[in-house]
Image (cartoon, rainbow, N blue to C red; front, top):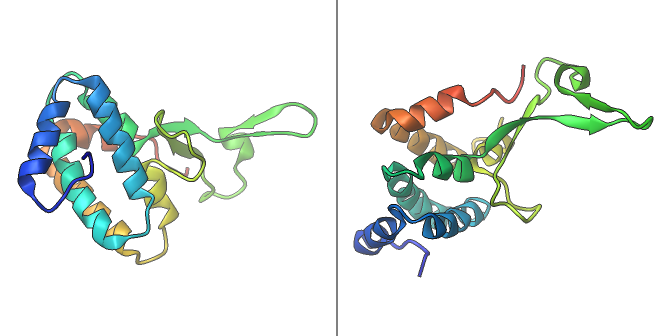
Length: 159
């Protein structure tokens, strides 16, 4: 039932159920994360339309929804053989090496990634998902200042 369809009635009912409801918002965010990591382009288009309505919901959990779906920037680290750790700039050899990863607290499977991580994995390819997701992300940023601020203040993937 949580899967969005072409029918806007069902999608609007599901987003109305998420308004002010953290448990339902969390469940739907998991559904969106799993959908983003699929390779079925037709399904992804339907999910991205529903995702736009889901992220625009204006309540107390809006920032949580953004963090769940897009991911939170975290510094890349690596354990050394001697037992120490390397963080951030210590670990970077080239300017385009990744300095941050984007993780969602809802991702429990190693195969699923947050939306920012998924978009970065498409870098350098003309992937249909990537183009569609960027278009929808830019339209979301133009509609909602909170989303635009979240995207703007997220750390860049490389230095």
